[in-house]
Image 1 (cartoon, one colour):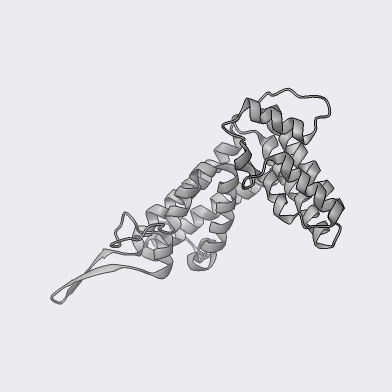
Image 2: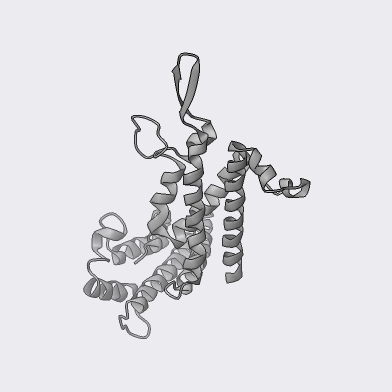
Length: 257
């Protein structure tokens, strides 16, 4: 996997986010285009917010989920309100409201005043762009273990292969691939937490070591309903022998510790 691709994708998301933010501001204040002295060529670089925002949001959300999981709720809250709002205000106005063109007005006699309107979305959009900008700093930070990102990408590919094998009836091969991914994941977790193990540890051994050293993180009921890792693996092995489905067990290797 080429790590430069991640950097390029994040840089593209940041640049597109700034352009979308500018597009929103211009939509609300067309005079801004003149003040920025945008010529014909410059105007063409400004995207159509209503046409391009959703794809940017979906891609940005995926990156935030992977690299800054602690900011996912904030990022989503700027897109849509998770709570039932008694009234629409500038404090709870979201980008979704902007896309719908929502506004609140008050009429006094012949005069109609806008209490809150689409311009209120400029702030949440700016906040979203700033969160995406933080991805660059997170990516370059010495505190971020890039190996985790690489391994997650590789595991995803291997699980995809296992899923395809299972769909085509090669349950034994699918179970074997899923088992290898699980074992490698648990060994990586042990390494991250500086937990020593034998040269060729089994999944059961790794699971027991993790339960003893970090019980608050890895408990029997955490990984998949009420099944411990070794029971899940036993089910996977059983599926290999009896041609039962293993698809419900593949997701457990995504557990992040």
